[in-house]
Image (cartoon, rainbow, N blue to C red; front, side):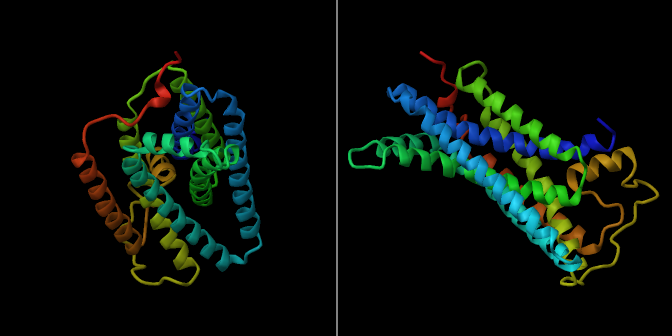
Length: 291
């Protein structure tokens, strides 16, 4: 892996690892409960929901990429800005949603499965829909993040980083499900959550730059600083910072203001929520060993 490629693959790898483990946690809870309640015969239905969600996410991503290729330059910049803003929104919602939902996720999923098998209910179709929408949420979040990160850092190795993260998530999810490993999910999501907020801040500042290039934002365009002689983006450290956090050696004042303001607010809320939440692990029915 090249010096340029390594850092540019790390952000896609870590985000896809987290997204994949979220999806694996949800489907693992569903699969474990089906097994525990004598409904293992319905597991093929779970796989149908997973495959449909993955296919739908890929179609959305391919459709957005094809549509954007037809845009003129300014429209392309606007599209990239909008994708970046959506990516920031879904990344932030992902971080804070998992913190809140994890406390009751297991119970809610168990109730939803029981309701799906009540007499007169849709049964298998309801189970397909449950898995589909759970995985589809993660898939769409991944699509918008990857579009944003690929537009900023068009490294040919970035997709490989995303694929590697997804494959690792599948492996971890399977090992957790069969009881092969136990990991502290709460600590994992806390650390990756803080990292994702840093990534989102870089995407947000880049979206502001795209809005300027599209002719829609012209405030605070003076250079905040110029580190091209001290820390050029082409240097080894600059490459790392650029690949992970969208570092610019000579950013506009507005980009720096937006970056720091976003981090100050989001990290303060994230860390305050972490301090006030009870010190207990996330639900891990997926990690219960087979009887």
